[in-house]
Length: 323
Ligand code: UT7
Image (cartoon, rainbow, N blue to C red):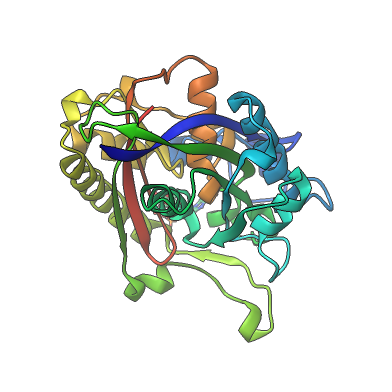
């Protein structure tokens, strides 16, 4: 018998304000055409004045609890993947814990930038597999609009805000790829690539800073590293690409998503794509895509999924999960 971390519920939340590319044309030397063709992005959601990461995360959390038919008291642990917490401390996770009325268990943040949700999934899976927790909520939530240099056209057009939440719970599996739940995890990072994607400020430098990115260089690393990690995760799970129903990639750029799918030998019909509507929401992009994919009837119970993400660090990874 194998303990599996099985999906119990999913939900998401997007801030009300939608910013189409045409709005950015008014303040930046850019065009809808450039943004669409280079990134696939058409619009993004941006938080309102005063709206915080823990606030949008709590909305997503409540939606996931409703989907699972659970209350906050049923959770043993809560993990928030974010690089844009409300405060330096306490963690966004404990703030969400208070907002949703979860008074027991434990909560903590994971910071692996755009790979954050994959890292959080790996942590939740380990907590469940080890018997430390039976039911874990994982949230990817970001307000990247707060760390964007809105005068830098090379980054300002790419990012958005949002939150997605997934609940995993312990269940008995046979130890085969037919089990529902997380089947394998592949994590990687290489700090030598720090300067490709970073925020030029932080707590111990007494500044806030803005996101800086060598887009072309990150792009160069992305397809090869994502495909290799997804292949490694599939091998660990004992499944082949031909068996995969859905790839749910980090939504940074449609060209990276297409290039990775091609390298894996999977057609775009098997890829969940939300980048056109959300932009790059960093750690929130995968749970948002999962939630939208379930909502619009693409992802169904029993489907075999591969998620993969790369971001600042560089940090990257992939998870194979049977829904
Ligand atoms: O989630 C974390 C991981 N991040 C990513 O995965 C992002 C990876 N990188 C990318 O998605 C792409 O590299 C970008 C979308 C950022 C850029 O696409 P690109 O095809 O690599 O374009 P580029 O950087 O080579 O820029 C081409 C041109 C440049 O002009 P010159 O030097 O050729 O004259 C840029 O100055 O496009 C110019 N440019 C813009 N033009 C209009 C850069 N940003 C803009 C803009 N509007 N917003």
